Structure formats: C-alpha cells, structure tokens
Length: 326
Image (tube, rainbow, N blue to C red):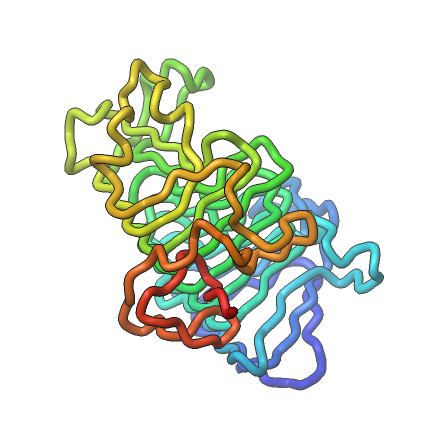
C-alpha cells in the first residue's frame, strides 16, 4: 500500500509482479524518465510502471484527494510537456487494475493495456502524451467519466479486438493530425502493412455511450474491420447518444461506412468545427460551452449521476465527462 503524504519518486522501472499495489487517495507519484537499456526492454525511454501477469495496480483516489502520476520536472515550463517518462503498462493477463480519480500526464503513453489484461478507469484524466492516451491490445477496458486530451497520436487506440466500454467520456484531439478514437480487429505482422498477409484476427466488441470524440482532424472516429463488414460478429460496435466528427469515414473505402450514423449510431450528433462545443480548446478547457451541441444529448446511466467535477447530472445529461451548469 502506498499512502505516504510525501511524494513517491520512481527511477527506472517499477515492476509489480506478484501482488496488488494499492495507491491511496492523495498520493503523488513522480516518475523520472530518460534513455535506458536492459535485457527486458532493449533501448527504451525509462520511467515505467509495469504490472506483470500476477500483479495489478489499484489507484483509489477521491474527488477531494485525487492521485497524480507525472514526471519529476516541476518547473512551470514542464507543466504540460509530453514524453517526460514512458507510461503505465498493464502487462499480459494482468487483471484487477483499477484507476479512480487519477490524473496521468506528461508521459510517452498514458496507459497500455496488453493482451488479456483489463482496466477499469473511473473519473480519470489522461493528458499530454507523446503517443496514445489509452492503447489497448486484445484486452478489456471500462472507462467512465474520463477525460483524455492533448495526445500526439490517436487518443484512444483499440487494436486486435477485445471488449471496450466507454460511458460519459470526453476524448479531445486538437492540434494534431490524429483521431480521438481508432479501432480495429486485427494485427499485421508484415513489414508492408498494406498487404497484411500474415496477421492475427480477434473479434471486437465496443460500446460508447454519452461520450464526445472531437478534434481538429475531419474524422475523429476511425474504423478498420478485416472482414470488410462481412462478419458482424467480428466487429460489434455501437455508439449511443454521442457527439463526434466524421466526414471522410462516410465516403472513403467505396462508401463502406456510408451508413455509419444509421447502422452504428443511435441518437448521435455529427458536428463540425463551426458548432459550439467546448469552452476553450486552446486553454484545454473541455467544459461545455453555453450553446454546446453536447447539451442534453445523453440519457441517464446508472452509477453516473455525478460528472468528473462531482456535479449532479440532470434527467437530460450532457454528453461527455462534464455536465453544463448554467
């Protein structure tokens, strides 16, 4: 158990191999990053929190005392600097990982969930990453009331299928040529990914409810189904009461997803950059604008009566992690 009021500072790699590390509310963790080399990882960016098969991590923050995991450079100019440490890796078959009221920032990758591992993230913020905010590979992720933003590549990357459930999440991808959400049900082993003759395939089941996927790029939701929609069981994806931005998705690949909003979505809004949505994306304030198109879009979901700020949602909740308060 980590519950010391003084900060924990990690140099190198923290490997959790045969226990459940419980991090208590208010804990601050600083991870020192840098170029390193060893037999396990080869040459890599140091500063890793890694759970192995028989290990897990539970970060049990609260609204009043969140847990913060970040780099060890505390000067103002490093406050939003990406890539200061590597990130959190939930290794293969690592089960029972849980983040509540946790802030993870300034890393290369926020959280990587490896094959057959799982993660439940509640009221969690992942920001300022040099790669994905969440990268999940053939795994299981439940995310509720989460905010993911300022990621240099796709904010949420779901690969080689798995089971994924996102409720009342805001995923914002501004200022980069990357999507808020990308998912597929295969992995290519070829050097030339366009051929993809040597591959693994696994079914994808993903549900997104009352969430926002928005950003600078014209398409903020990317889909790739190895079967080309010939096998519905391989690509079971639903969006309910979500706000997103999609344009070329509807016309590319000979119109493969031209019926996206009719087939995959229920009660969704396809917005444009001219639509009011957030208060101030330049200041990374993802609370909703007064005239936001995300207002009253959602439906009540059990267990999500409060938003990320602890504000009570009304009977017509807004999409995303924040409820607009007039």
